[in-house]
Amino acid sequence: METNKPYRLIGADGIEYKSATPGSLGGNTIKKNDRIYGRLDCPAALRAIKTSKNYKEHRVFFASEEDAKAAGFRPCGRCMPKEYKAWKERKAK
Image 1 (cartoon, rainbow, N blue to C red):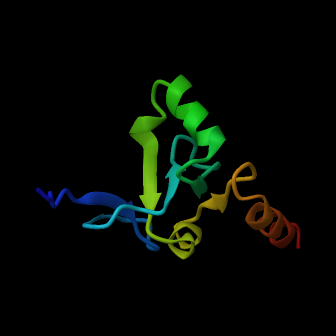
Image 2 (cartoon, rainbow, N blue to C red):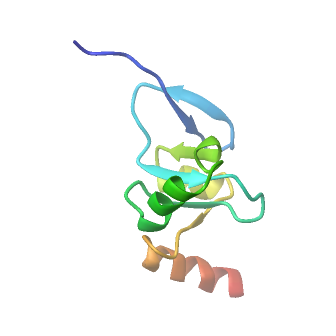
């Protein structure tokens, strides 16, 4: 039996929408100035999910890396080191 449970994703415009397909990346909006996205199996995110009382409430998901970037999120240094390094180099310019 297949369910059509809609997934809540954040689009490039930063607005939440419902999708039949789950997101491929996760992020968090706890801190407005520290909006990070990364892989769903990121060790840092999994640890935060276990230890933080309100992390899950602020968890967001993205269909693509392009959507995450356009929504104002930066790559995670732990699970996406190449992308993080490139982001940091662009930011330094």
